[in-house]
Length: 314
Image 1 (cartoon, rainbow, N blue to C red):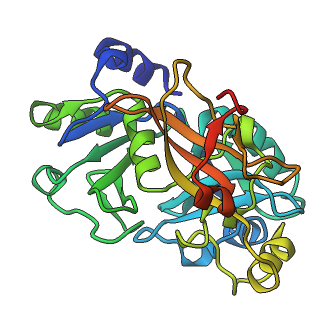
Image 2 (cartoon, rainbow, N blue to C red):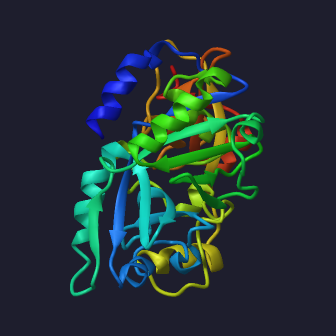
């Protein structure tokens, strides 16, 4: 991450900032960016990702996934374009491993993949106030505009939210302009909103644990079933056309003394599966107490309503 941005955030004391606000400004230092450039960039990505990269331009981004040949997700991605370059946004903890993996398949393609996290900074603005603070706001999910050097991407969901991506000086200028009108919030705020809106993330602890449909990616326009071949496509298509989805993602709430973590196993007395009832996808403190979470579980377990953390004692 940009060291100057890191130093600026350290001065903001955001770890002690609130977890909720009607008009919230949030730094996203836990998010990293991979830049893909070169004349074969879209052709290369088309063979790697679940969504149709040809639909991406400077007006429309998308959700997508990178999978292994068995259809299991290495990463859940927010994808957008700036100029001629394509950007993949993902948890920064995953960036180096995903970058190395994707470079393995460049072969003779005229493509360059690089870490862009030092060049561009990401922040989020949330609440009805975005229409007051921004002259022009993208209206539809994943729609995008460019304003004063910043890429503004409208996030899916009922709560009005935009991500702003740009060079540090542009981000600091915007931050200074809106700070008197907003509440600075804790870094968990944005992930908590993603949980509430049903937007999954994949972390190191959950890499290769989920098939896209079990994280509802087909309901989030994160899979294009007409685009042709890509890594994992056969398994993902079979799940749609021949399979029966027995597991999917749900919103959950836990009262626990110790903070749960992505990848933690879940228990259900009604589950007969040798794979267990499911596991946590993402989890964050809930301002009302306990923890809000996205969980990938058996549909039958959700219907039985007997889910517990860990084991029967959880």
